[in-house]
Length: 344
Image (cartoon, rainbow, N blue to C red; front, side, top):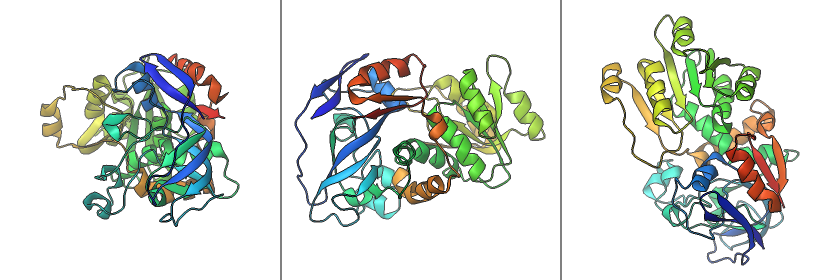
């Protein structure tokens, strides 16, 4: 089968790889019909995340089940399904407490040995462990480009808001308007935020945030602290979402949050950073970080996508074939794309 593989920082390649085979009764094999290139794939592409040469990339996918183990009961051969970016066993301490993203046996697709040695989904076929939790049937009539977002990007944006315990009527500020940040803008509106501020430097992304109902702030032209304070009686935002994964963005998030506010850090970090703990401490901020509990939110996110209240379609800027994946990575790296979708 064809698969997109990591070769070296800045280099991916489409290669022939062996087709996956079932090794457990809880596994399924999915024929991938749509996959995506994600911002975390770009971290691998840049060499920030350790990856073995020849490893298959990708963790977002929609397709059809072509084989299922004897213990797989929630989906069946022939079902059109979407996948979560990570797997969960459903039985360990963390799964029993609903923290599926911290499963003792959890593995992340396409991220090498460091995160479970699970080959990725930018391929013609993908092996799916713990299929009962990792896969969901796609609602009839839902386009692949919408379903694709449930298992990672929209699920992560939704998690950023829900994990920060947003109360309807509060003010949210989202820093970084990549796909996850823009999904967080949508989720904040759906979850009842009275005001949503969206901070970035890219005019097209700022325009999309405005389309989703946010007040856009261009960092090149405006200090975000002024409009946020003006809208909150000088307090600052109740919730700040840091969707960049950069120390400067985290520092800005800490400064934009009100006293006793919440910072939701969903940007990817792979290295040490300095945090102004004095400011975090004196403001009594709550800081939540880490990748999202997509499995835990999945059914609600799918329902919101099906209803149209969450709509990621405006984020998809490029449709490419699997063979064009290397160009897709290059386009994404040059910031010429917001979301790249791959088809076989």
